[in-house]
Image (cartoon, rainbow, N blue to C red):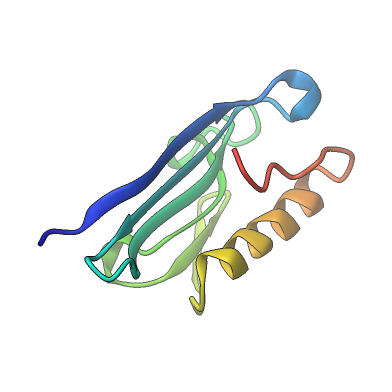
Length: 104
């Protein structure tokens, strides 16, 4: 059985919540194990490079990594929950007066 996209969410954020959008995608295998993911805060007004991705995590290109304003660094992946927590920490550092949208 092929991997299946189990989460495909896009949330447009109001100006009050930080503007831009949150993108969340997860693919799982037949055992429901996460095999691919993409979690990103996209806002072309904050960072126009990297297709507007201000901060994000994914495992494309064969490795787990974090994007931050055009820079890429490797990360250790243990679970989606832990990854989403890291994403919220990044969000809180970028937008300290806004509430991190943990679920969209």
